[in-house]
Image 1 (cartoon, rainbow, N blue to C red):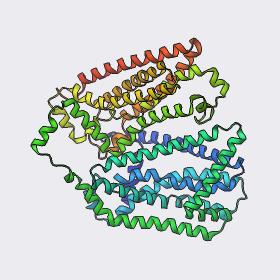
Image 2: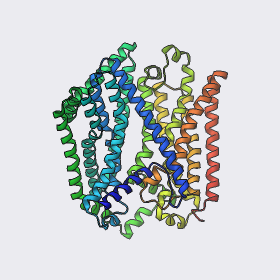
Image 3: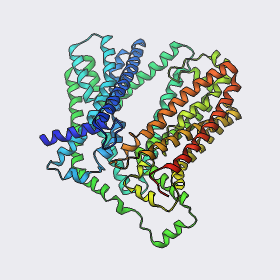
Image 4: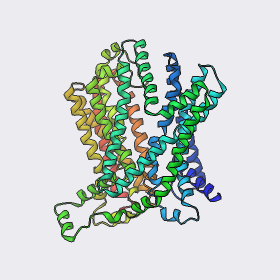
Length: 557
């Protein structure tokens, strides 16, 4: 039991540590400060999520749909941990960097799997509590508070995510098996996952748009009410255990809730038993994955090398690294998709309809205001793309991702400019192409003029180029080669934070400055600012890159 408790403690600390960027060998005070900062940010985000969900619950009450809230809460609680479990299963349950050390411990395999699976369940339960508690509070404030119903509602919070998270773990296991057995399954996994996230994103905003285009507030409430009613009915039809929980909470009856609890716990225990039985085979396959790669003869290697420059070969290596690490791909590829989605959405729905529909949270603009400020609003579109381009910072942490193989890049017979330039080009070239495609879509649809299309490319790429070269310099100055999993670099590194938060600050601050300038001097001044600032940022980024090539300590001449 002591060994199991120790493993659980290690897993919880690892999960907490994953929320704070930290490098090995840092001082205790520095680690404490980073964890404290991460805790404050997590609490703030949790409070924001809880407030948002509570407002949704109050909206359902205002529409007379109070009885839908328990079903809605169970939907949110059940789905809360699915994506997290799917993303964390590989690296937490299987595909461990220290698998041989873990399995050599004098602890049963079931205890090892239980400690790791328990961490995934715990994270899902915490997220479920943040989202479900406000809904139940709103529900019981507007209905007679039966003690039995309140007790069952509280018990449903830890039980709701167990079965869905177990299914998500099984799905992650199946995808991992496919990734091991098929050469290009990793690419298929990334494509399908990105498509799934894109559908969720587009579906959520399409729902807001369809409801927001109603002519009056009553029609909007009716649209959202019909969606909420359909959600409750669909939940009970597609997921009967949740219907049992809803019946118990609403009526205070224990029997249907006991059936729900038995089902949730039974699925979780079945997941534990199946995972511990398959634990050795899946990790054995992952450990021996390298032997399944193609064997190249000397003749084939010469054929592949002919006509390929070192710069092109290194660019190909960067692209393969990007698609070879799922978490790296998810963090850095969705920005490209978002750029195209924004262009298609504006072209299909129209800028005027998009802004007046309320689909953009917190933006309440009347149709008259959109007509009056149409020329200025178009000039702000490039700043949207400044935000999007900084969501794909693959080059920011590319030096640290070399890991323990960094000595290979340090000893290749090419100058530092070639190595660093390949890393930068593998990120900058797709960003420029995506910006150009988005600009063409908007210009052809008539939602933006040719000048604004040029501004999208110049400003979006210029700000991105400056931020990505700064992030690359930060990574080169203090690389982290001692990581155990790529997530330590992809999700918790300073270069990524520099690019993402710098892009957010540039997008909002620059957009505000552009609006104030147009308010004083007109839309032409905004166009001039966008083009001039884009060119200036690109030039500054080039200077930063030149300085990086001359002063980097990682790659020697």
